[in-house]
Image (cartoon, rainbow, N blue to C red; front, side, top):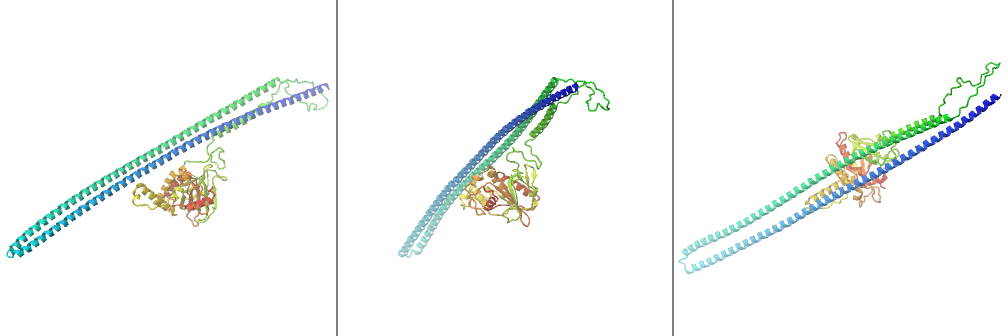
Length: 603
């Protein structure tokens, strides 16, 4: 009986020690888990701070690049304005020189005419004096003859013959003298006229040579200017490519540094976990060694008369051999370290692939991505696309707006020789229900403010004032503006010229964002009858009409800086073999404003 009580007490003591040991192990596990959680939180905080710092530096770098780009564009615009002022000044100087030459020529011609008139008046006076002298001589001779006939009738026949002969000789002599004088005056006048003509011809040739030289110099200056502009464009392109290469290299270096840092952090975490695991093992081993060993009290087995009397008793085959039990703390720490290491590998892989565009349709874009932008001329970034069922529909039947619903801000329009295609470039999701095949297109109407807006008033130009080069250019521009004001569809060479002119206007104005400043004092009438101020003057429109009975239409709203891509894309579409007599034209200003206001783009 005493042995049984002793065994029960020892068993209770052993269970109490085991309970305390389990509590101590549980407490150690909790402390280890708490330390791991603190380390994990600290790592997450450090990563967030580093990510925030990286984003701030990228934003500063991007703002700096944007400022440099805007400054370069401003200098380019100032240079273009200065070049235009110099051209206008040279044109004015040439006009003034020509005007002075014309006045001098007119004065010389007037002086020559006056001299000629004086000479003719003098010749006429001399002729009249000679005729009067001849008349007086004839009258005197007649009187003498009558007197002689009265005095001497006998000598009438001889005297008459003598006088007749003398008179004939005198008349012949006077006539010869008058003819000689007339010939001399005619020769002098002919010589003077020939000399005047020679001088005028020499002056005309000198003026022609001067004009030819001036035109040659102007052509040489224009060619030099064109070469300079081409060289400047090449240098700008080279600088842009160098900057792009530098940015790519910087991104690669930053990515390499980030990967190295992530690997170092992962290694540091692995080392820390290994040290914690080793420390935990050492503590467990020390505690195991320091744990007191309770000796087992052996009692002799008392036999009885009942069969199976040993049932229910604990039997140990090798009582002196202690079976080692696995440490629960070490197992938990090992599993925790394995889980965290796997999470770190996934995080490092995510960081390495950060910034790459995914092709999955259900993968959302990165939350840290900026506004979508592309320099690819084949991708036209659009704000929205609307579909009208008929030609006379006022409201769209369906629409696709950038940044609304599942559509991101990377909504783009691609115009190829096969037709018009709309895609979500950020998610790489094609919007096939908005495809328009090239062979179904009937016409394409565009709205580009500097190209379509007839904001210059045509004026009647004098023939003399329009002789200059700039006047002819202005007259041609006014003619083109007047033609663009009319809503008509162009085909063939006219359509090609129209798109070429649109591309030039867009590159000089729209691509630089100058529409708002250029048309700040212009207000258009609205087809909706609105009297408000015209807003959003830089937006461009493209309206494609389908070749069917209802004349279905697609309307694309394009940003000002993307307008130049429209002209290039429409030129590419017209050069394709699938399109059939695609007509190109302008939208009326009032209609364009009315559409924008109806669709909510006037704010």
